[in-house]
Amino acid sequence: MNTIKLEYHHSIENKVIKKELEFEENLIKTPYSKNSLFVSKVEGKSMQPLIMDNALVVADLSQKDFENESIFLIYKDENMWIKKASIIDSNEFFVSINPNFSHLTYEKKDCRIIAKVLVYFNSFGAHIQ
Image 1 (cartoon, rainbow, N blue to C red):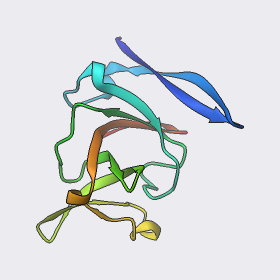
Image 2 (cartoon, rainbow, N blue to C red):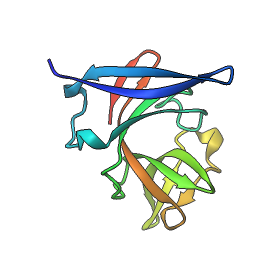
Image 3 (cartoon, rainbow, N blue to C red):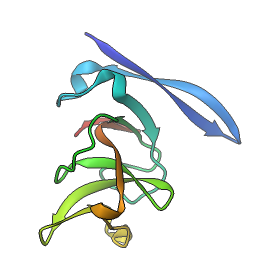
């Protein structure tokens, strides 16, 4: 079985620690660019119960086209956010899944897509997008 190994950085008590995430290549079900993959740690609960606080997401920097219902890392207001692409009344938005964070809804025109999330790892296992 082929595996993908990606390095990421984890901060504990103001100390940055290098870590690796290794997973089976076949977990990613859609075409992707292996050289464009990276890992990011989610901080926050706006995407729960799908993606939990402190989950690790694997995203593809080469995929920046809006796809309804897909999960993306986006840049808005000098922050990176994880949101679901959603078409509402024929307009493109990025939305939170958790209803407690429904106020975190952004119009696509006000955001920059960083990468499409392909797979994520909550503390209880991997999930494929």
